[in-house]
Amino acid sequence: MMTVTLQEIHSQPMAWREALERTLSTPIPQRPLLETPFALFTGCGSTYYLSLAAASLFQALTHRPARGVPGSELVLNTDTVLNGAPTLLFAISRSGATDETLRAVERFRAMNQGPVWAITTRGDSPLASLADHTIVLEKGQEESVVQTRSFASMYVAAVALAVLAAGDKELAHAMWELPDLGAGLIEHVHPIAQALGADEEIQQFFFLGSGMLYGLASEASLKMKEMSLSHSEPFHFLEFRHGPMSMVDRTTLLVGLVSQRNSAHEQALLEEMRALGGRTFSLGEEGTDVSFHSGLPEVLQGVLYLPLLQLMAYYRAVSRGLDPDHPRHLSPVVKIESLV
Ligand code: F1P
Image (tube, rainbow, N blue to C red; front, side, top):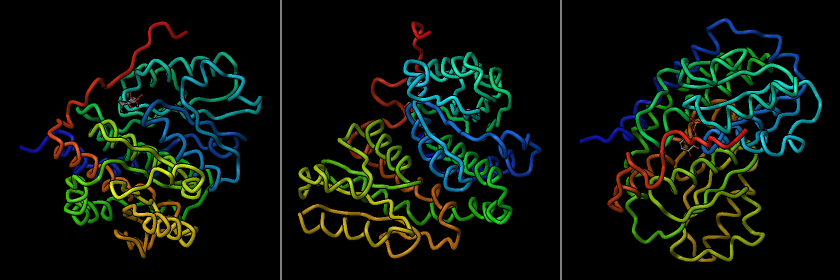
């Protein structure tokens, strides 16, 4: 029987498509997107990592500063986050009900810093009622605790908003190719992810990604922890030489989310780690163990990395006798009543 998690991973391209429909072919307010000088993205756990990925992409595309922070930092360390500039806050939450994210939005509102936009799968959530504008992605909704389809679809929506904020019509047009590319890719990578996930020799994972891909490497690492209870950490590629490489041995798998712009540096790092006895697996547009060959501009490729990484964590869990639908200690929504 197919688990809920596996169904959700497999069905994600239709949720990507909905994310495009809700952003690119639905009228949305343009002024805050085009004019607010600073963009802040916030969320918790997976949606914090999404915030990191989205902020770096937003800044690269719009040439306006953007930052991603955990909701708890906006609440508890507000002065380290807000800089006084008029700000567009993107609050991202699958459930729209995580206390830290809700309190973050309230704190932001109290500081009168600017508009709040939400990206969520739940239009009836507390977050949606707090926000000035909400992108609702019903097809991203999930039964499982661990975010897979929801994450990818909310990420696609965030990329589309950055593309709109940059006013780049060509990129907006090119994004529509993603769902079909994703569907083909999922079929192609499934057996590869299954084999890697079932490989009992691997004891620890490092997910490497830089620039716009660091947030996605962090999310991949979280998937591996949550679903399979395996040791797993994310790093920027070149950071790995500055200490973490002391951990490398033959039980280590380094998974490289290789970029196009820095592929020579990133591949060289992976090669060095192989020389130290580690194992590596790379994915990217071309010249990697799994290559997308999407032909899309690099800024749009991020979501293509996700299915293989999600499937690898899933199959690692299954091969360890764990139930990916019911991860240990986790619940779909974290509530902290004492947070004000
Ligand atoms: C985020 C969250 C994550 C957690 C898990 C379930 O919720 O609670 O913190 O790691 O993956 O989701 P949300 O605010 O996006 O609903």
